[in-house]
Image (cartoon, rainbow, N blue to C red; front, side, top):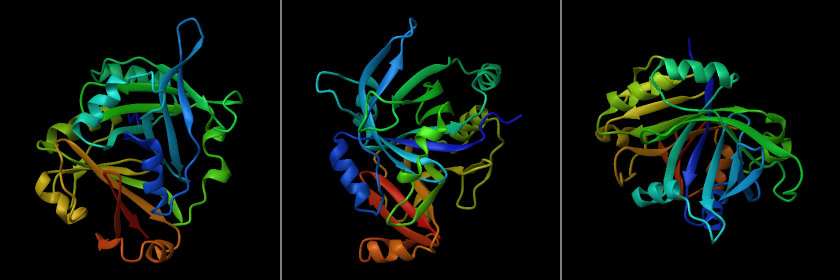
Amino acid sequence: MSIAEGLDHVGVAVRDLDLAAAAWEGLGFALTGLARHAARAADGSLAPTGTGNRCIMLRQGYVELIAVVDPAARSATLERFLSRYCGIHIVTFAVSDEQGALARLRKAGFATEIAASERPADPADPDGPQARFARLPLADAEPRLQLLRHLTPELVWQERFLHHPNRAVALDAVVIVAEAPAVVAARLSRAAGVAVLPDPAGGYALVLAQGRVRILPPESLGAVFPGIAIPSLPFVAGIVVRTDDGNAAVARLLAGRARPASGGLLAEAGGVAVLFAA
């Protein structure tokens, strides 16, 4: 039985949230405002973590830009990510039953617990309604995997956040490059509860009900994202984003900056390759 029901989002580690947001806005995305992360302690109290995000909400899936936003705080996890490269380090699968997912993950050999986290639903109103999440982090290797249930999806996928000048509507795929694709693919397959398939570019593909993850050897990256350098391995090289207008808006907005690739238009933002697919 599958554990993951779809590709929920990717987490992009950045040093400067404002600069990163500007790069993504330059590709025609609209971003949410700054929301500070918080976690529930065992006694039920809510404590800030020192990190925050700005998100690119799509009708299917989203992209989360993450940085330390409290000058007095540190994040060992983000520091470790950024010591390797600035870009995608977190791949998140969606689940609708966190308790069932927990049982199946443990049966598959993963040591994890359900972690509760929150952030303001409206960044302009930090004391207002909180978007709440039940996370199952799998922190044993990179890329960092987690399974997540949205407890308040109506507060996350607000209509006002879903309209982008580039007409992006869905997170269709994530592309990972690994020295040993079979090892990474086996780990993702075990976490998702879904068998991997051969990828046409080489390596493997984890095909979910919504979205897919491609795990490629280094020599295959150029066939998918030509011209993208590999800083270290494993490397989450980028994403495929679907548009609803045949890439007409992207072609207009990114004229001279996006280049044809893999049947779409390829651009980059802060260490992330973004392939717009019609």
